[in-house]
Image 1 (cartoon, one colour):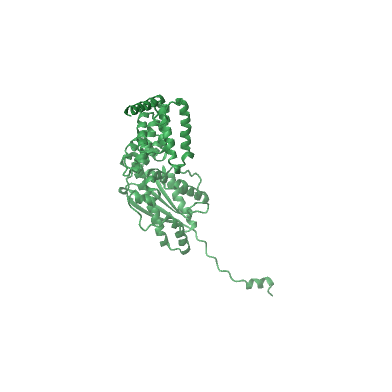
Image 2 (spheres, helix red, strand yellow):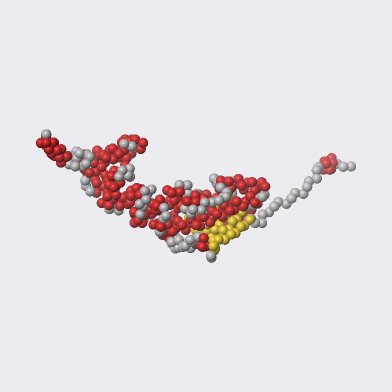
Length: 405
């Protein structure tokens, strides 16, 4: 006779054998190469690297020493849940620039994407990215840790082209995305390109449908980014080495600012002197005057400041700098007082810039009070002439007027 337990077992539904879990055995790898003639590749000298990115190098970096890296991710803001489902690498190999892309078709393929990337990072002397310092490289490191692949990993030095490009092109291009730089700098706008903002959505659509064709646009977008980075790196290197070759003087002026920040005043001055286009002439003149002043070449600096003041250019800073030089370098407090008072009037005429409440006005007012005490009140405060001379001139004019009457 069957027991109750046997009866219960008999009425249980027969379970179907579960399908074995899929085990990833790799990831999708796509490779394409381009002739090196498409890129003005050249060794990067330590001086060029220092100017471009304050990059400390003891020797030249050859093209084959560099690894170009770009990621496509499941989110645009990073975070613990963001995954780099596609990592593209670009390398110079002989006469070719080779782009290799590692694509994660499902989440269990992530280690197979990361492993060759980790190996490539370990072999290069520098990795080149675009906004990689803030996004790509921290994300790659996070994913290596999550997959327990980070033991012994040391991130190579990073040449982040976004910051280098902004310093040179922002005055002209404004929004320095790779697409904008391609259009404005190289004159080759992208056609039928998938916007980066749509990449995560497109990937999730692929995960739902498993239609590999949905990833074609993402692969093309990623490859174009890597090719553009290689082209952009050497274009920027050429400009830092030969700034006077810049086709647009806004870029030339910006290069002057880069040299100035790096302490290369002579090279900065060459850039500023070459800026004669209306779009940057005033800015360059002021920067050059500041350089001359800091180098102790006060006669030349005053000449430029006075030109700007007479022409109504340079703003209130011109009056402040002139007042400083006349007082402290030329020992002409009367002239300094006159200039400072003119600067105060300049501020009062520009209420939209703060008028009497602006820091510049207050600086000049304090300077005027000190200079009045310094001159003993014996200058007219307008021309800087001695008060006795001024009165004598007025009396002489009055006498001539009386005689004519």
